[in-house]
Length: 326
Image (tube, rainbow, N blue to C red; front, side, top):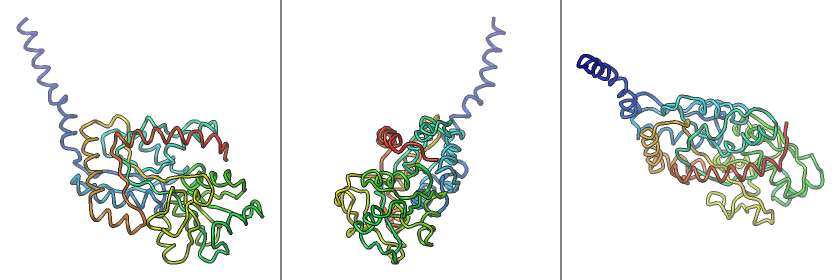
């Protein structure tokens, strides 16, 4: 009996370093650089928000937070990569509101989803800006009324770019089309950056995107904002009316938030949440975002999780109304 007890205690003693290893790893997190995947090419809202946030979070965590751009499938490729990553806090996702749309779009298209929302865990929301309807600065459409009159008079003659089917630049334009009974031709690109370049070069006539993607071009006179999808006037574009103000009952917000793989340990989540809060309070990050034409509209994990759930329900209904888009 004494021998068995001694062997048992010896076995526990041998195992104890192994059992303690995960706890030590969580306590020392992070002990190497952290990856923040932006699932779009450079130049879009997720990239514009992600870079100053990554820089500030890196300072708070004491390790570099490295932004990696990986576009494809309207953001779905990158989102799926993080959803399936090891839940250790070293693979993060800076996603846009399309994250709640794409799984529903896969259902409409009757295909296996690239990822599901329950594979990801909200860390924090950083921004939530209404999208803005923009045309080129040399466009004959000086006002929203000019734009929509042309779209009604010549169905299919107006083209608009987007970051991909069912993405955050596509959905608001589908709302506008439905509310105004107009037909405009959708031209999807691989991200907001390429879509904005397509507008600037004359490949498409218009698009709807977050202000931070286009403010520099609006200030330079290369693009003109005609309306936006918010509730009231925007501080960065006080002269631009909302669609609701113009009698079009639609609203849409392009938000950016940070996610980790489901199963990420609580101690790691706590450190990520602390770093996210520190990023919002960081003067350099705030200034960088303000220069881009946006501002922090922070939600910590519990509030952000409730927000994501509500958004998923609302967008599921919207995707069903849009229907199949190939």
